[in-house]
Structure formats: C-alpha cells, structure tokens
Length: 102
Image (cartoon, rainbow, N blue to C red; front, side, top):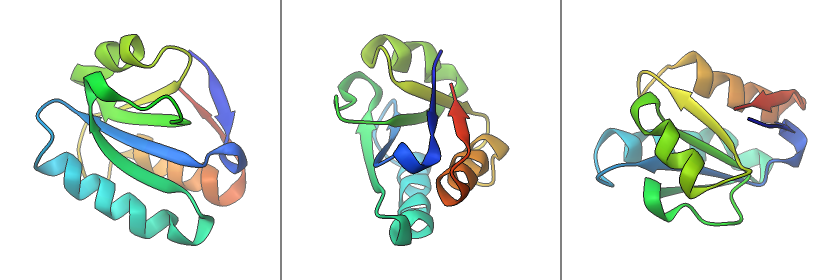
C-alpha cells in the first residue's frame, strides 16, 4: 500500500478481468476528465498492467490480482463503475495535487 501525489500521476490504468464493457466506459470517462492534465488513461486486463502505470484503478474483486500484477504501484479499488467516490478522489487529486493512496 503506497501513495502518490496527484501532480506526479502521468498514467492511469483501468484494469479489468474480461477487457470489455463497464471498465471501457470508465476509462473513456477518465480520459475526458483528465485530458487537460496530460494524464494518459489506458484500459488493460488485470494480468497485463504496464510497468509505467502510476495508478491502477480496478474493481474491488480484482484488487488483489492487480497488486500482484503491479507490485509497488498504487492500486485504487472501487465498487461501482460510474460515480464511485474512490475514482472521483483520484480525479480530484490530479486536479489539485492531493495524495492518492491504495
């Protein structure tokens, strides 16, 4: 469990199990919200998280697998795909320079 300052986040990865559906929508929504901050948002399977990810956002049920696949990365688990407070907190931290823990 680590943390990172929002100003140091350059790449957010939305990791999922199957690679389709709701997590693709979440990644698209984050791309729009973070565009003006020059933060890349990628969507990948949980077992293929790229090494240059700063923050990994994944469903609660996949958090343990994400931590195993991306040791040392900040993993932020969420409950619901759209409007989850954990995801909103990541966006706000990038906007204001707050801390993201996971």
